[in-house]
Length: 400
Image (cartoon, rainbow, N blue to C red):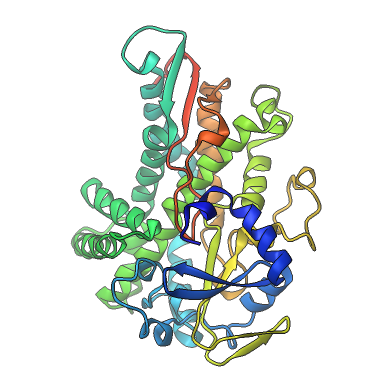
């Protein structure tokens, strides 16, 4: 799953593995790191809803993994809800849900607009990409619009200062790559969040970090790792939910025609991507403490069981066709069971707003290369583009 072949055509491999292995596939997440990949929808639901047999605590597995393993930062134990079970899971999840519930979703619309408009105006103000007047403008959306927007909105939600946000975002991106610098990225992330928490203790505000601190029952280490989880869920996956959705809307005739005609909406496109090309494609990891028999297969004790949200969502046993998915949110892109993502509504809203603001100004935006020439980033966990080059006719910047 770390190969270029998997990054280029994961769905072809899911189909091949399903034919060869059924719903449970032996894979390697990294060289020498075996795991079982779950690509059956019903099987995934049974595992996700059975935390006693399939707990999320990786410490027994982690003890057997070299410290420099590139997937370790994304899988290692942390004192947070994602990697805990029982009472500790309930305690951490309650605090996180309570803090997230303080975010004013109505006010967040205005925050996204305040961030999006200057970024879109910058795109409009670079005709031809070289400062020359031209009818066609070229841009790279991930670097020039999507990532800056996501990082600034997330900074607002978590109360991150700009310098800290830059460091945290760089560390998180390295971890998702699961490459040689993943461990250095994890260290950068933790150090930046430690400083952030100290700043918030001195100057609290109406943000998620301050509300986590106000809970008063977590150590500095615990606070750091709540923020690691929240930032991980709200940065790279959200950025690539936006980019994957824009790619779909520019290349699929159901949506490409709809940019102007409105035949299908942004929310329809988001739902389609969450089914077919979710940005966090393979995750929701558990570690059975004893060998477990599932679908006639014995899963080894203390070895990762990874849910393929992308594979499960496209399981022929439940698939009804891409054209039947408007408004259907039975996908597993947000997980399921006790570890289901608590920030899904927030992420969904930011993604929809980011896309709608862009398309309001640039309704004729189009991909600037052949879809087959796009490069997908390598890594076992995400479905993420290296870049998203686009072109569009010059537009009048929005008033600020």
